[in-house]
Length: 402
Image (cartoon, rainbow, N blue to C red; front, side):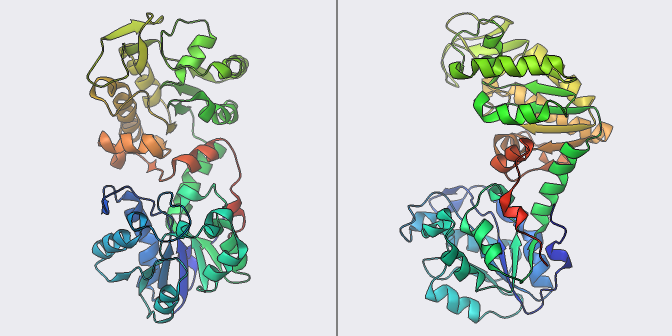
């Protein structure tokens, strides 16, 4: 883990280039969820409160890379940040490194903030282009990685820019430091019992994480549509539930590995099912064990909800990545809600360390009003999952030559 954070770095009268994650949802230029912007504020404040000059860069959405696209501009993000900080925040020009952007950076005073335009308006960002990275590095005296959500990527701003900084300081921000500290310590030396909750639609997305965690966890709780690939591999009737037929052999292998190891791998005992993938249409029934033909599992059932909640509340370390069902729809939200509440109870009542791995799990924690009661809610779904898989992050390996 990088040793040096922005907190230990002298920033007065220096240009501090901060890679943030401002990839926020927009609806007609209106930000519908500003959590990622708020998550960056401690690092930004640390810089400007100590007289540094904060130059922020981020991607937003998936532009073509052929230039400015108004619908994916970071200008609304700069306006929201200005509102949150109570200070003027500029977003000059139409490209991340434009004459207007360079002029704005050159005229910065201490404690000023400039947001560079969407990095992906330039296709060289995604390709990791060294010349593009150098043009960004030339703006700065210090580089800060505070974008955990993209730490598993090697885009120019994440990997080539810190390399292009040469001997100038490259450090992490508060958000990345916190993410790495929680996730790495949970995996390296968890207080036991250590329970991992994995859900979501596809077994293929979570297989590497399960394999990496099997030797480490005491319990692995499986939910979501991915559970039905495992159950079919065991010979259960799963109706028309979603199954990855090409992953049945992998599922059997994982079940055999779990049986040979100390970990208890738990699958749903009962299921809330419907005849239609819809919130309002279809017949809904609860099935124990075998699912009737014509029905699909869309949430864990009542027995499983209680069983999983009991295991979670008896744990001292919990990592949760992926919902238990289609939690956005009222008939199928209860399983995920039970898991979310059990994590909160484990923290509040038993002092457990509970870590939510971003993405849908973080959205569920917010929806069910438990996020504030958990130890840590990650800002990066893909990044946290890759950390659970045990993958190294090249973007962090080049940090910390301060």
